[in-house]
Length: 331
Image (cartoon, rainbow, N blue to C red; front, side, top):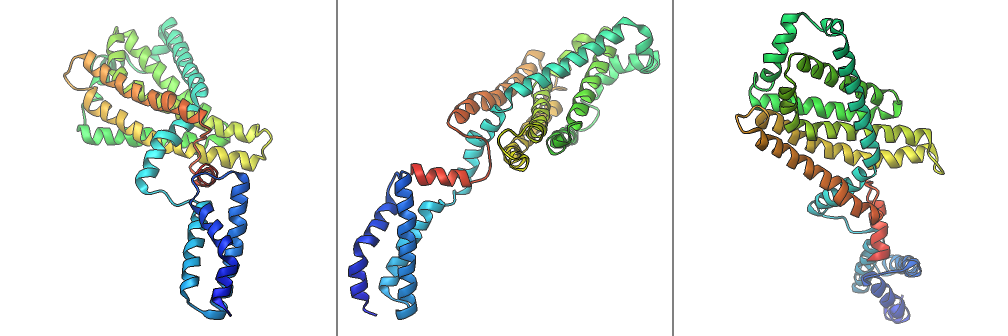
């Protein structure tokens, strides 16, 4: 085979392939041309290797084909870029999609808790079913506060974090069942309402709110988001729209998996606050302020960064295929 003749005949085609491979932006027609010229170049390379073995011409063409292949498959991002993209794009977009459902979960939780408080406060016989007078008074005046400091802070924080992360994970993992998330919402609301009722009955309402607020601002918000994610997955199965049920579940589950990962971190932060800040002998304004800053950071990710990412077309999906496709078209 005359390699010089082949190189001369294919020179313009291979040059065009190199140009497309290094182009900063490709439209649809350019992307189609890149793929077609890649296929033609691959055939030429196969012919060269089959007839002449390893040659300098074949090596140069192989390098050009590798550049083209990276152009339409997308070069893998380094771990730092992936980490940054997750926190600035994928997670915020996924959280932003849940904003209104999260609000409704919060409203439902506080409404149920409020009804429990009203019900218990309206009839002394109800609170009597929770325990004896001595037990309830001990809980209100000593036990509630002691709960936050009776164990070493590190082990207490670890236990709280693990428990809350497990609840959040269950909401997302079992959300498709339809009944699990309402059950979790009801349980949390009842626990909140019963505890508040006991504290209110013994004039410890200020203690209740002061000890709940520092960590509860972020912790409860994370639980609400997890419940919203579970409900979103269930709704994707019930009303998939133009998508098949399988496609709807797969798409939303992939996107909401990023929510599960993000909540693990934010619940870790709330666990640190509950273990080290809530029982600390600091002014309450400082402790609640720390909790408010933590919540503010979460809301900035959810509503600030999330709004920008969502408007840019991000769905929160962790699958890199869509990102690779956008790189091909946009450069």
